[in-house]
Image 1 (cartoon, rainbow, N blue to C red):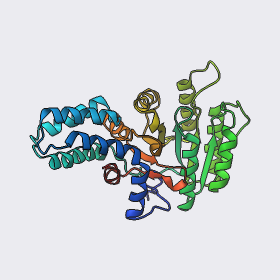
Image 2 (tube, rainbow, N blue to C red):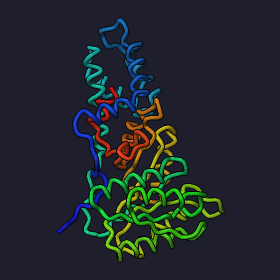
Image 3 (cartoon, rainbow, N blue to C red):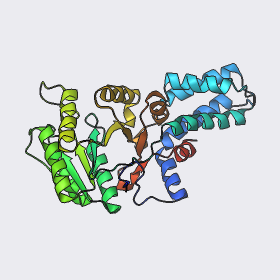
Image 4 (tube, helix red, strand yellow):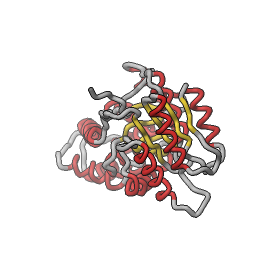
Length: 315
């Protein structure tokens, strides 16, 4: 019988109904205000849609970091519908954005393997360690036995930070000394998870190396090491991106994906940017499911991505 260990839809302490939507709206307030102010200027004293209005709308979408290509695509789709009413234009824009987001929503993976191994990647500073800690806390709260692998052995304090998160989440941790071989840590962690009957393994990785070793080659080595210990693993390669970096996040994802075949994305720090449109841009530009968004510091502020809720909060 297949067991569901996919992490994409686990949401311990999920606030039902309007509570979460209210918080999401609050955390996306900077982006929503950018759009609202722009709409007011574009639609002021106008009730009919014309070419100039659509050009201004395209510029507004680019300002919100929806991206040039995605903004052009949205305006082309709206133009093709020959909309003349302003309210209808707003409604259609919401629908077009929602359709982009829905295409790239990921369902939880169904796997036979126990443990379920998730390799977490991303450049330094995106919130990778915090994301791992929050995922661990959610999984343990859902009754899963979790083990964390401290395979970022290059960054000062990375192991200590992860140890604190593991204690807070009630998860086991496998760690070696600083500057140890990251692939060896991952290998030992998967072996320990198998022997201890862990359900989920979260493997931290370096985002920058202080040596001449190529980062992508080091990450590929870790991935091979995991597979050597447990054939078929890692079952997920989750990349963490920082929303405040805007279009650079997309460039990062493309680079990492070429080397590691990313299965899902987690977008952090959405509460700290006026350019939350990056969510739309990421979903449009990358054929990689957006699994999580981070909208704050609390454990429950890392959420499975829900397109309908996001569009409601954005507008």
